[in-house]
Image 1 (cartoon, rainbow, N blue to C red):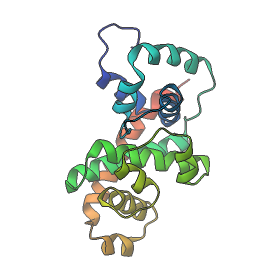
Image 2: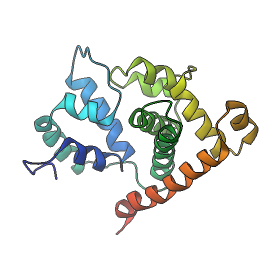
Image 3: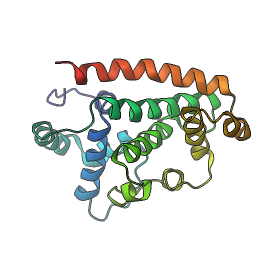
Length: 191
């Protein structure tokens, strides 16, 4: 789709959401391509815009020829967490759903790679303060969404109740995210 002259940023962002490894590479590309970056990155769309379509096209050709990590169960966990954060943020109305998706995705990638979020942050371009603080474990409205999702994943309903997030909202978001993830990952694992 990148080769089409009329491709939109929204289409690119939609494609990239399906591959956490690709998102991580995109963020690293933005970091390396933008020496002296003064703007913070808060979403996949920001990274695509900062890199630019022309550069992104060239890099995608190289990336597609390399071994892309991010299919199977690891991808599913990261994508489900990301989309659950997005849907829950939308339900609660406390923070931007797109930024919540990015937080969930980055947290899922860190878990998949068995590294701390701080190690992951070291290789990324500067994130917005809200996203950086949330990924680092700081208490803010964005982090509360991730904490609720993590509590639900771990079946820690006491922590969920203490956070004041209604269990039915998290459950509905999680189930919808599971269905979405299944649709997104199926083409990646098909022979």
